[in-house]
Amino acid sequence: MVEMVVSAEQAKLLAEAQDSVEIVDAHGNRLGFFARRFSDRDIEIASGRAAAREPARPTADVFNRLKSLGSQ
Image 1: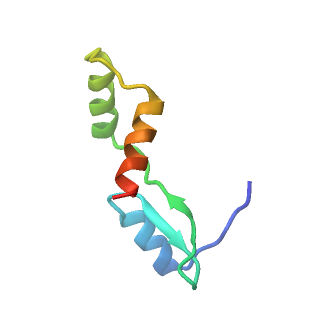
Image 2 (image 1 turned 90 degrees about the vertical axis):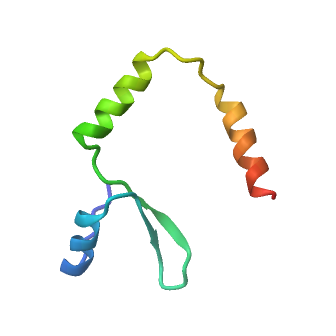
């Protein structure tokens, strides 16, 4: 794994982020995302949804839906 050292200011922004952070270079090119850790509440919500046993949509359907949104 590659390790990258960030400045104190960047570390503070990442630590305080309430959502994922998109990381871009100086030209605005997307490099990736920083995902915050899951909170106890996040895990509780996901567990509840998994236990609900509601019908799931196939991944292909989800991808097709997302692609159709991008072409609008």
